[in-house]
Length: 262
Ligand code: SAH
Image (cartoon, rainbow, N blue to C red; front, top):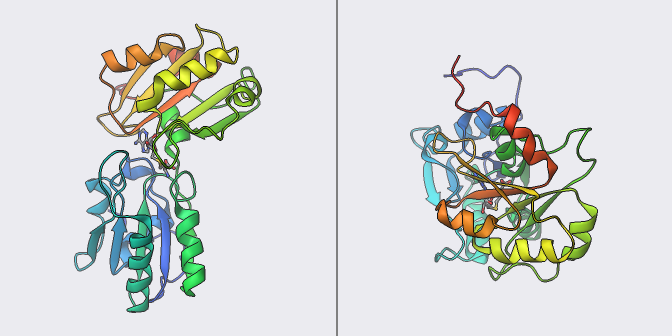
């Protein structure tokens, strides 16, 4: 266990909120700042996606509050969560708002920061390792290589109402981005693959579905665009999962390292 950080971190002042990314699950992917925040906070308001391994790192006398969000399940409303953060900060607590992955990548961290600004509550943002990049990496899939793609797009498979986002120009995405990393896509695989196929992506294009990425329970399904919805169902892939579409998926064949033994 680290007892001293290898640098002097900024002080976590009482009355401040730190919006911190916990990374995708493997506690080894926490940043030093996230670790420092976990060891300093009086109260930790966390999401469903933050696992017990990471939550067990908080100070013994710190309070843990669950403010989870999970597609389809009842969860506290966003305004209630931000109101609670403001209330705790105004009580003079060091408030750690802990989110899976990176707080500003499909994590509503931007909305929470805006609410803190409006309430006059000082805050800091601690970026985290996002699941859309770390998940493929733990599956042996680099999200870019010089030989395959010069662009990658992070996209959400669900909008606020839980449907495939209609406001997105799927045609432009399909044509313009050789690699797509889709968050929150599991329930919409059919709609997603149909849209990409209709926009000209090849039926045999590689698709990886990575669930519980970076955790010991990680599972990876390698499939093709035309059959990915059925195969995802047959394989009973579970949320949270990242879906990666594009030529980089084939690189897993030679780069899969997770679970290799020395
Ligand atoms: N802020 C987070 C994303 C929050 S949206 C981040 O940067 O990673 C929630 C979605 O993130 C999930 O539906 C899933 O698509 C993805 N996700 C988060 N953790 C994951 C994990 N360990 N494995 C696979 N997908 C994950």
